[in-house]
Length: 278
Image 1 (cartoon, rainbow, N blue to C red):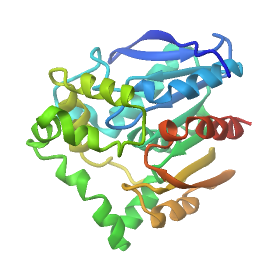
Image 2 (image 1 turned 90 degrees about the horizontal axis):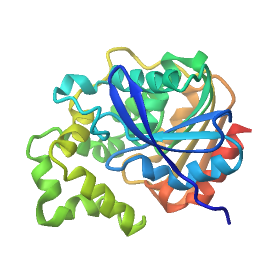
Image 3 (image 1 turned 135 degrees about the vertical axis):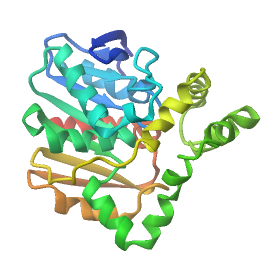
């Protein structure tokens, strides 16, 4: 076992101040980890600690809308362009010319787009759950099952979503985690998203619409990890992702695990990240 040593940071950027957790030596090889919805940086608590113990400098921020210091009100401030811009701004603020990028769920989508738009900044890419955006687009157009799985993305744009998720002691929000992750994390996520404006900010990621440009192929060394019990992303998009990666590519399929891979099987997820970092 290792001792869980986590620092709490405030990262200043032009967009505002991002809260973050971190571990490892300041001069360690940098790794940035991006959380999904409806989570926060503590999704990566185990991975950040493991990376730190292994000599990496691991940083996981509460992303735009989740950090109170970067919570604009306009939906237009939550486009993929802004989210990718935050990744680069955070890396710049840390003095990282190149870094390894890890993402899950929405953080995975942002990680893919960062690799598409700024491949020169990344050493490796590791994505959990979320397929390449080009693969997902193909799946939505040709796979009826994926279209059904993704209906929630459209439903959540409705303005009644916040009330529905937080009603009855946030029952709907808690239910999303399928009782697969530790209750203390679920309670913290619910508490954070119950703050005034927080859930609206998180849902604005869905409301901001699709990126302007078409998704290109990724040249960065990539590992994509998909779980067979994922309710959001089916096998079509998962297997299609390889077609969108031109660099070294590794696909890992984990059996009998839900969408919440980094928290449901933290040790295995940490090991996979370390393997891709090489």
